[in-house]
Image 1 (spheres, helix red, strand yellow):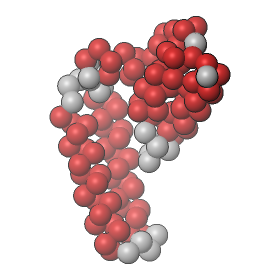
Image 2 (cartoon, one colour):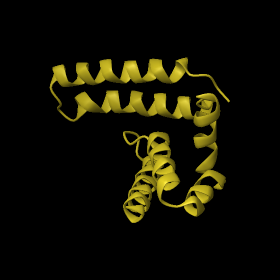
Image 3 (cartoon, one colour):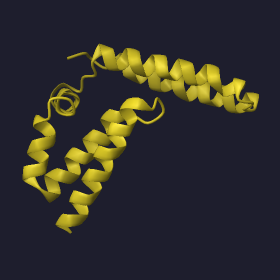
Image 4 (spheres, helix red, strand yellow):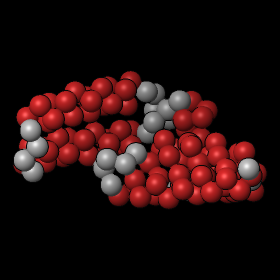
Length: 117
């Protein structure tokens, strides 16, 4: 079972790292899942993730203060806006673009209501 947790942890780290570059793939939730998995599978890897200079700070901010950095909020909001503009340009139905807009608005409201570290 230990190796299952470690494998899932690495899967979530990979998705989180890919999410740094892709606007629709969220980074922090995957890193939080990776931290949870590693805490059950390997304290050594869990410690590495929490102490990583790039991947660790968002985890600490969320775990300790339920906080999201302003930079993360701005990048996420800009990515959502770009996605919302691109959707009708690629020929998506109007109802799909509208539904996407509502979901992205809810996500943006959640993001901006969280405190900043």
